[in-house]
Length: 438
Image 1 (cartoon, rainbow, N blue to C red):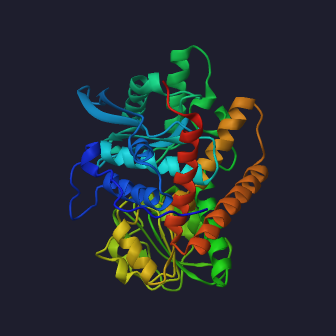
Image 2: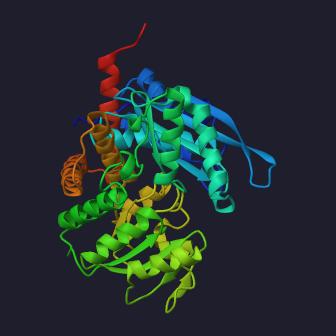
Image 3: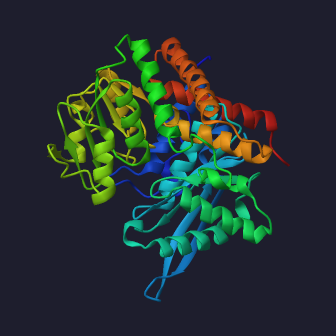
Protein backbone atom coordinates (compact mmCIF):
# COMPACT_ATOMS: atom_id res chain seq x y z
CA UNK A 1 0.00 0.00 0.00
CA UNK A 2 1.50 3.33 -1.04
CA UNK A 3 1.00 6.20 1.38
CA UNK A 4 1.00 9.67 -0.15
CA UNK A 5 1.85 13.03 1.34
CA UNK A 6 -0.35 16.05 0.76
CA UNK A 7 0.39 19.68 1.47
CA UNK A 8 -2.24 21.67 3.34
CA UNK A 9 -5.13 19.27 2.74
CA UNK A 10 -8.60 20.58 3.46
CA UNK A 11 -10.07 19.20 6.65
CA UNK A 12 -13.52 17.98 7.53
CA UNK A 13 -13.99 19.60 10.90
CA UNK A 14 -16.57 18.57 13.48
CA UNK A 15 -18.41 21.87 13.01
CA UNK A 16 -18.80 21.08 9.34
CA UNK A 17 -20.94 18.11 10.22
CA UNK A 18 -22.84 19.58 13.16
CA UNK A 19 -20.98 18.19 16.15
CA UNK A 20 -20.97 20.15 19.39
CA UNK A 21 -17.68 20.96 21.11
CA UNK A 22 -16.21 18.19 23.23
CA UNK A 23 -16.08 18.56 26.98
CA UNK A 24 -12.78 18.32 28.81
CA UNK A 25 -14.05 15.36 30.78
CA UNK A 26 -15.23 13.17 27.93
CA UNK A 27 -14.13 13.75 24.33
CA UNK A 28 -16.89 14.03 21.78
CA UNK A 29 -16.81 10.65 19.96
CA UNK A 30 -17.81 12.18 16.63
CA UNK A 31 -14.86 14.57 16.79
CA UNK A 32 -12.58 11.63 17.60
CA UNK A 33 -13.97 9.58 14.70
CA UNK A 34 -13.50 12.45 12.25
CA UNK A 35 -9.95 13.06 13.46
CA UNK A 36 -9.07 9.40 12.93
CA UNK A 37 -10.64 9.39 9.48
CA UNK A 38 -8.93 12.63 8.45
CA UNK A 39 -5.53 11.24 9.39
CA UNK A 40 -6.04 8.21 7.13
CA UNK A 41 -7.41 10.33 4.28
CA UNK A 42 -4.35 12.59 4.49
CA UNK A 43 -1.91 9.66 4.38
CA UNK A 44 -3.76 8.01 1.50
CA UNK A 45 -3.82 11.27 -0.47
CA UNK A 46 -7.52 11.02 -1.24
CA UNK A 47 -9.32 13.90 -2.97
CA UNK A 48 -11.52 16.31 -1.06
CA UNK A 49 -14.73 14.97 -2.58
CA UNK A 50 -13.94 11.52 -1.24
CA UNK A 51 -13.10 13.06 2.13
CA UNK A 52 -16.50 14.76 2.29
CA UNK A 53 -18.26 11.57 1.22
CA UNK A 54 -16.53 9.48 3.88
CA UNK A 55 -17.19 12.10 6.56
CA UNK A 56 -20.92 12.46 5.92
CA UNK A 57 -23.35 9.77 7.17
CA UNK A 58 -25.69 8.56 4.43
CA UNK A 59 -28.73 8.68 6.68
CA UNK A 60 -29.47 9.88 10.24
CA UNK A 61 -32.91 9.13 11.67
CA UNK A 62 -33.97 10.53 15.05
CA UNK A 63 -37.30 9.31 16.39
CA UNK A 64 -39.57 9.85 19.36
CA UNK A 65 -40.27 6.60 21.21
CA UNK A 66 -43.36 6.94 23.44
CA UNK A 67 -43.71 4.10 25.94
CA UNK A 68 -46.46 3.29 28.40
CA UNK A 69 -44.64 2.58 31.65
CA UNK A 70 -45.74 0.01 34.22
CA UNK A 71 -47.42 2.70 36.35
CA UNK A 72 -49.57 3.58 33.29
CA UNK A 73 -48.00 6.97 32.56
CA UNK A 74 -46.48 7.63 29.11
CA UNK A 75 -42.82 8.58 28.80
CA UNK A 76 -41.18 9.67 25.55
CA UNK A 77 -37.62 8.52 24.84
CA UNK A 78 -35.38 9.65 21.99
CA UNK A 79 -33.88 7.08 19.64
CA UNK A 80 -31.49 7.23 16.69
CA UNK A 81 -30.46 5.03 13.80
CA UNK A 82 -27.53 6.15 11.65
CA UNK A 83 -26.29 4.59 8.42
CA UNK A 84 -22.81 5.92 7.84
CA UNK A 85 -22.06 4.01 4.66
CA UNK A 86 -23.75 1.41 2.46
CA UNK A 87 -21.15 1.46 -0.31
CA UNK A 88 -19.76 -2.02 0.38
CA UNK A 89 -23.09 -3.57 1.40
CA UNK A 90 -26.03 -3.17 3.78
CA UNK A 91 -25.54 -1.16 6.94
CA UNK A 92 -24.50 -3.24 9.95
CA UNK A 93 -24.30 -2.27 13.59
CA UNK A 94 -25.70 -2.68 17.07
CA UNK A 95 -28.30 -0.86 19.13
CA UNK A 96 -27.40 0.41 22.59
CA UNK A 97 -29.58 1.53 25.47
CA UNK A 98 -27.76 4.00 27.73
CA UNK A 99 -28.43 7.32 29.49
CA UNK A 100 -25.54 8.97 27.62
CA UNK A 101 -26.64 8.06 24.08
CA UNK A 102 -26.47 11.06 21.74
CA UNK A 103 -26.70 11.47 17.98
CA UNK A 104 -22.99 12.34 17.84
CA UNK A 105 -22.13 9.12 19.66
CA UNK A 106 -24.29 7.04 17.31
CA UNK A 107 -22.75 8.74 14.26
CA UNK A 108 -19.27 7.94 15.52
CA UNK A 109 -20.16 4.34 16.27
CA UNK A 110 -21.67 3.97 12.78
CA UNK A 111 -18.49 5.32 11.19
CA UNK A 112 -16.36 2.96 13.25
CA UNK A 113 -18.59 0.09 12.08
CA UNK A 114 -17.86 1.05 8.46
CA UNK A 115 -14.12 0.73 9.09
CA UNK A 116 -14.55 -2.42 11.17
CA UNK A 117 -16.47 -4.24 8.44
CA UNK A 118 -14.02 -3.00 5.84
CA UNK A 119 -10.87 -4.07 7.69
CA UNK A 120 -12.41 -7.53 8.15
CA UNK A 121 -13.33 -7.73 4.47
CA UNK A 122 -17.06 -8.13 5.19
CA UNK A 123 -19.63 -7.08 2.54
CA UNK A 124 -21.20 -4.49 4.85
CA UNK A 125 -21.28 -0.79 5.45
CA UNK A 126 -21.53 0.75 8.90
CA UNK A 127 -24.63 1.61 10.94
CA UNK A 128 -25.55 2.03 14.59
CA UNK A 129 -28.55 2.75 16.76
CA UNK A 130 -29.31 3.86 20.27
CA UNK A 131 -31.95 5.07 22.70
CA UNK A 132 -31.29 7.56 25.48
CA UNK A 133 -32.62 5.68 28.50
CA UNK A 134 -31.53 3.96 31.69
CA UNK A 135 -32.39 0.27 31.21
CA UNK A 136 -31.29 -0.50 34.76
CA UNK A 137 -34.33 1.42 35.99
CA UNK A 138 -36.79 -0.22 33.61
CA UNK A 139 -38.69 -3.48 33.90
CA UNK A 140 -38.54 -6.22 31.28
CA UNK A 141 -42.03 -5.29 30.11
CA UNK A 142 -41.06 -1.66 29.72
CA UNK A 143 -37.94 -2.63 27.77
CA UNK A 144 -40.03 -4.81 25.47
CA UNK A 145 -42.46 -1.98 24.77
CA UNK A 146 -39.52 0.39 24.22
CA UNK A 147 -37.87 -2.01 21.77
CA UNK A 148 -41.02 -2.72 19.80
CA UNK A 149 -41.98 0.95 19.44
CA UNK A 150 -38.43 1.92 18.47
CA UNK A 151 -38.42 -0.88 15.88
CA UNK A 152 -41.69 0.36 14.40
CA UNK A 153 -40.22 3.87 14.11
CA UNK A 154 -37.02 2.80 12.31
CA UNK A 155 -38.71 -0.01 10.36
CA UNK A 156 -38.66 1.84 6.98
CA UNK A 157 -34.86 1.97 6.89
CA UNK A 158 -33.89 -1.47 8.25
CA UNK A 159 -34.08 -4.90 6.62
CA UNK A 160 -31.87 -7.83 5.52
CA UNK A 161 -30.84 -5.97 2.35
CA UNK A 162 -30.74 -2.47 3.91
CA UNK A 163 -29.49 -2.37 7.48
CA UNK A 164 -29.16 -5.22 9.97
CA UNK A 165 -29.15 -4.31 13.71
CA UNK A 166 -27.50 -6.35 16.46
CA UNK A 167 -26.96 -6.18 20.25
CA UNK A 168 -24.69 -3.60 21.84
CA UNK A 169 -24.41 -1.98 25.28
CA UNK A 170 -27.38 -3.02 27.47
CA UNK A 171 -29.11 -4.98 24.71
CA UNK A 172 -29.03 -8.76 24.24
CA UNK A 173 -30.51 -11.71 22.31
CA UNK A 174 -33.92 -11.13 23.89
CA UNK A 175 -33.89 -7.54 22.62
CA UNK A 176 -33.12 -8.81 19.14
CA UNK A 177 -35.94 -11.37 19.37
CA UNK A 178 -38.42 -8.57 20.12
CA UNK A 179 -37.02 -6.52 17.24
CA UNK A 180 -37.21 -9.43 14.81
CA UNK A 181 -40.76 -10.27 15.86
CA UNK A 182 -41.96 -6.67 15.50
CA UNK A 183 -40.40 -6.37 12.06
CA UNK A 184 -41.77 -9.77 10.98
CA UNK A 185 -45.32 -9.00 12.19
CA UNK A 186 -45.29 -5.78 10.17
CA UNK A 187 -44.04 -7.63 7.09
CA UNK A 188 -46.50 -10.49 7.50
CA UNK A 189 -43.91 -13.29 7.47
CA UNK A 190 -40.81 -14.31 9.47
CA UNK A 191 -37.67 -12.34 8.60
CA UNK A 192 -34.84 -13.81 10.71
CA UNK A 193 -32.21 -11.98 8.63
CA UNK A 194 -33.34 -8.54 9.83
CA UNK A 195 -31.17 -8.81 12.97
CA UNK A 196 -28.20 -10.77 14.22
CA UNK A 197 -27.31 -11.74 17.76
CA UNK A 198 -30.75 -13.26 18.30
CA UNK A 199 -31.42 -16.55 20.15
CA UNK A 200 -30.35 -19.73 18.36
CA UNK A 201 -33.92 -21.05 18.64
CA UNK A 202 -35.17 -18.43 16.17
CA UNK A 203 -32.29 -18.38 13.70
CA UNK A 204 -29.33 -17.14 15.70
CA UNK A 205 -25.84 -18.51 15.19
CA UNK A 206 -23.87 -20.87 17.38
CA UNK A 207 -20.89 -19.05 18.86
CA UNK A 208 -22.33 -15.53 18.55
CA UNK A 209 -22.53 -14.88 22.28
CA UNK A 210 -18.76 -15.24 22.75
CA UNK A 211 -17.70 -13.97 19.34
CA UNK A 212 -16.49 -10.49 20.32
CA UNK A 213 -14.42 -11.91 23.18
CA UNK A 214 -13.09 -14.78 21.07
CA UNK A 215 -11.99 -12.41 18.34
CA UNK A 216 -10.33 -10.20 20.96
CA UNK A 217 -8.53 -13.25 22.34
CA UNK A 218 -7.26 -14.20 18.90
CA UNK A 219 -5.82 -10.72 18.27
CA UNK A 220 -4.09 -10.72 21.67
CA UNK A 221 -2.50 -14.08 20.84
CA UNK A 222 -1.35 -12.83 17.42
CA UNK A 223 0.14 -9.72 19.04
CA UNK A 224 2.04 -11.83 21.58
CA UNK A 225 3.44 -13.98 18.77
CA UNK A 226 4.74 -10.97 16.84
CA UNK A 227 6.15 -9.33 19.97
CA UNK A 228 7.89 -12.52 21.04
CA UNK A 229 6.08 -12.69 24.38
CA UNK A 230 4.87 -15.88 26.13
CA UNK A 231 1.23 -16.86 25.63
CA UNK A 232 0.63 -17.96 29.22
CA UNK A 233 1.13 -16.52 32.68
CA UNK A 234 0.71 -12.87 31.73
CA UNK A 235 -1.30 -10.49 33.94
CA UNK A 236 -4.55 -9.16 32.45
CA UNK A 237 -6.76 -6.24 33.58
CA UNK A 238 -10.21 -5.79 32.06
CA UNK A 239 -12.28 -2.62 32.22
CA UNK A 240 -15.92 -3.62 31.76
CA UNK A 241 -17.29 -7.03 32.77
CA UNK A 242 -20.23 -7.39 30.45
CA UNK A 243 -20.42 -9.87 27.62
CA UNK A 244 -17.09 -9.00 25.97
CA UNK A 245 -15.14 -8.46 29.18
CA UNK A 246 -16.33 -11.54 31.03
CA UNK A 247 -15.93 -13.95 28.12
CA UNK A 248 -12.49 -12.51 27.28
CA UNK A 249 -11.48 -13.14 30.90
CA UNK A 250 -12.86 -16.69 30.75
CA UNK A 251 -11.13 -17.54 27.46
CA UNK A 252 -7.77 -16.11 28.50
CA UNK A 253 -7.99 -17.75 31.93
CA UNK A 254 -8.54 -21.10 30.21
CA UNK A 255 -5.30 -20.51 28.28
CA UNK A 256 -3.27 -19.88 31.42
CA UNK A 257 -3.35 -16.09 31.68
CA UNK A 258 -3.78 -14.50 35.12
CA UNK A 259 -6.86 -12.24 35.35
CA UNK A 260 -6.02 -9.78 38.13
CA UNK A 261 -8.62 -7.00 37.77
CA UNK A 262 -12.01 -6.18 36.30
CA UNK A 263 -14.62 -3.47 36.72
CA UNK A 264 -18.12 -2.26 35.92
CA UNK A 265 -19.66 1.22 36.06
CA UNK A 266 -19.98 0.73 39.83
CA UNK A 267 -16.26 0.19 40.41
CA UNK A 268 -13.69 -2.54 40.16
CA UNK A 269 -11.65 -5.17 41.98
CA UNK A 270 -8.00 -6.18 42.13
CA UNK A 271 -6.86 -9.67 43.11
CA UNK A 272 -3.10 -9.68 42.70
CA UNK A 273 -2.82 -13.47 42.64
CA UNK A 274 -5.58 -13.69 40.05
CA UNK A 275 -9.23 -14.74 40.25
CA UNK A 276 -11.59 -17.21 38.65
CA UNK A 277 -13.69 -15.30 36.07
CA UNK A 278 -16.76 -17.51 36.61
CA UNK A 279 -16.82 -16.79 40.34
CA UNK A 280 -16.68 -13.04 39.81
CA UNK A 281 -19.32 -13.26 37.07
CA UNK A 282 -21.66 -15.17 39.38
CA UNK A 283 -21.17 -12.49 42.05
CA UNK A 284 -21.88 -9.82 39.40
CA UNK A 285 -25.01 -11.64 38.27
CA UNK A 286 -26.37 -11.75 41.83
CA UNK A 287 -25.39 -8.25 42.98
CA UNK A 288 -25.17 -6.16 39.81
CA UNK A 289 -21.55 -5.24 40.56
CA UNK A 290 -18.10 -6.79 40.91
CA UNK A 291 -17.13 -4.38 43.69
CA UNK A 292 -17.38 -6.13 47.05
CA UNK A 293 -16.17 -9.50 45.77
CA UNK A 294 -14.67 -11.39 48.73
CA UNK A 295 -10.90 -11.20 49.01
CA UNK A 296 -10.52 -8.42 46.42
CA UNK A 297 -9.18 -4.89 46.83
CA UNK A 298 -11.45 -2.12 45.57
CA UNK A 299 -10.35 0.23 42.81
CA UNK A 300 -11.92 2.69 40.39
CA UNK A 301 -12.19 2.32 36.63
CA UNK A 302 -9.50 4.97 36.26
CA UNK A 303 -7.14 3.13 38.62
CA UNK A 304 -7.68 -0.12 36.76
CA UNK A 305 -6.38 1.41 33.53
CA UNK A 306 -3.10 2.30 35.21
CA UNK A 307 -2.42 -1.03 36.94
CA UNK A 308 0.93 -2.80 36.50
CA UNK A 309 -0.08 -5.56 34.08
CA UNK A 310 0.95 -7.07 30.78
CA UNK A 311 -2.36 -6.84 28.92
CA UNK A 312 -5.09 -4.20 29.32
CA UNK A 313 -8.50 -4.80 27.78
CA UNK A 314 -10.78 -1.73 27.83
CA UNK A 315 -14.19 -3.31 27.21
CA UNK A 316 -16.51 -0.57 28.51
CA UNK A 317 -17.32 2.71 26.73
CA UNK A 318 -15.49 5.20 24.52
CA UNK A 319 -13.13 7.92 25.71
CA UNK A 320 -11.44 6.05 28.57
CA UNK A 321 -7.76 6.47 27.66
CA UNK A 322 -6.97 10.13 27.00
CA UNK A 323 -3.97 12.45 27.04
CA UNK A 324 -4.58 12.86 30.78
CA UNK A 325 -3.83 9.24 31.69
CA UNK A 326 -2.11 7.69 28.65
CA UNK A 327 1.40 8.27 30.01
CA UNK A 328 0.51 6.28 33.14
CA UNK A 329 -0.64 3.18 31.24
CA UNK A 330 1.74 0.37 32.15
CA UNK A 331 0.38 -2.52 30.08
CA UNK A 332 2.51 -3.63 27.12
CA UNK A 333 -0.51 -4.63 25.03
CA UNK A 334 -3.86 -2.81 24.90
CA UNK A 335 -6.67 -4.71 23.18
CA UNK A 336 -9.70 -2.51 22.60
CA UNK A 337 -12.77 -4.60 23.33
CA UNK A 338 -14.85 -1.40 23.43
CA UNK A 339 -15.47 1.02 20.58
CA UNK A 340 -13.39 4.19 20.71
CA UNK A 341 -11.81 3.80 24.17
CA UNK A 342 -8.64 5.67 23.16
CA UNK A 343 -8.45 9.25 21.87
CA UNK A 344 -6.07 10.29 19.07
CA UNK A 345 -3.99 12.35 21.52
CA UNK A 346 -3.59 9.29 23.74
CA UNK A 347 -2.65 7.14 20.75
CA UNK A 348 0.42 9.29 20.14
CA UNK A 349 1.54 9.01 23.74
CA UNK A 350 1.03 5.24 23.84
CA UNK A 351 2.93 4.74 20.58
CA UNK A 352 5.84 6.89 21.76
CA UNK A 353 5.94 4.87 24.99
CA UNK A 354 6.22 1.59 23.09
CA UNK A 355 2.70 0.31 23.82
CA UNK A 356 1.16 -2.06 21.30
CA UNK A 357 -2.48 -1.03 20.75
CA UNK A 358 -4.79 -3.45 18.93
CA UNK A 359 -7.38 -0.96 17.63
CA UNK A 360 -11.08 -1.41 18.18
CA UNK A 361 -11.96 -1.83 14.51
CA UNK A 362 -9.79 -4.95 14.54
CA UNK A 363 -9.72 -6.13 18.16
CA UNK A 364 -13.50 -6.32 18.72
CA UNK A 365 -14.48 -7.26 15.17
CA UNK A 366 -15.28 -10.85 16.16
CA UNK A 367 -18.84 -9.87 17.00
CA UNK A 368 -19.68 -8.37 13.62
CA UNK A 369 -17.85 -11.20 11.86
CA UNK A 370 -20.02 -13.86 13.46
CA UNK A 371 -23.02 -11.58 12.90
CA UNK A 372 -22.11 -11.81 9.23
CA UNK A 373 -22.02 -15.60 9.55
CA UNK A 374 -25.45 -15.51 11.21
CA UNK A 375 -26.85 -13.33 8.41
CA UNK A 376 -25.48 -15.70 5.75
CA UNK A 377 -26.95 -18.71 7.58
CA UNK A 378 -30.36 -17.00 7.83
CA UNK A 379 -30.40 -16.16 4.12
CA UNK A 380 -29.49 -19.75 3.24
CA UNK A 381 -31.65 -21.34 5.93
CA UNK A 382 -28.67 -23.59 6.62
CA UNK A 383 -26.85 -23.49 9.94
CA UNK A 384 -23.28 -24.32 10.97
CA UNK A 385 -21.87 -25.99 14.07
CA UNK A 386 -20.16 -23.90 16.76
CA UNK A 387 -16.85 -25.48 15.78
CA UNK A 388 -17.31 -24.36 12.17
CA UNK A 389 -18.21 -20.85 13.31
CA UNK A 390 -15.17 -20.57 15.58
CA UNK A 391 -12.77 -21.90 12.95
CA UNK A 392 -14.10 -19.51 10.32
CA UNK A 393 -13.81 -16.65 12.82
CA UNK A 394 -10.23 -17.59 13.63
CA UNK A 395 -9.28 -17.63 9.96
CA UNK A 396 -10.81 -14.21 9.24
CA UNK A 397 -9.34 -12.63 12.38
CA UNK A 398 -5.88 -13.94 11.51
CA UNK A 399 -6.11 -12.73 7.93
CA UNK A 400 -7.24 -9.27 9.03
CA UNK A 401 -4.62 -8.99 11.80
CA UNK A 402 -1.75 -10.06 9.53
CA UNK A 403 -2.88 -7.60 6.84
CA UNK A 404 -2.91 -4.71 9.31
CA UNK A 405 0.35 -5.79 10.94
CA UNK A 406 2.03 -5.91 7.54
CA UNK A 407 1.05 -2.27 6.87
CA UNK A 408 2.14 -1.36 10.41
CA UNK A 409 5.64 -2.71 9.72
CA UNK A 410 6.03 -1.51 6.15
CA UNK A 411 4.74 2.01 6.69
CA UNK A 412 6.25 2.33 10.20
CA UNK A 413 2.96 3.54 11.70
CA UNK A 414 1.00 2.47 14.76
CA UNK A 415 -1.55 -0.33 14.45
CA UNK A 416 -4.56 2.01 14.45
CA UNK A 417 -3.18 4.05 11.59
CA UNK A 418 -2.40 0.84 9.74
CA UNK A 419 -5.93 -0.48 10.27
CA UNK A 420 -7.42 2.82 9.05
CA UNK A 421 -5.22 2.84 5.97
CA UNK A 422 -6.57 -0.60 5.08
CA UNK A 423 -10.20 0.13 5.96
CA UNK A 424 -10.56 3.66 4.60
CA UNK A 425 -8.66 2.71 1.47
CA UNK A 426 -11.08 -0.13 0.72
CA UNK A 427 -14.18 2.02 1.21
CA UNK A 428 -12.70 4.83 -0.90
CA UNK A 429 -11.91 2.36 -3.67
CA UNK A 430 -15.48 1.04 -3.55
CA UNK A 431 -16.80 4.61 -3.90
CA UNK A 432 -14.54 5.13 -6.87
CA UNK A 433 -15.63 1.91 -8.57
CA UNK A 434 -19.34 2.56 -8.06
CA UNK A 435 -19.10 6.16 -9.22
CA UNK A 436 -21.53 9.01 -8.59
CA UNK A 437 -25.19 8.86 -9.62
CA UNK A 438 -26.59 10.74 -11.43
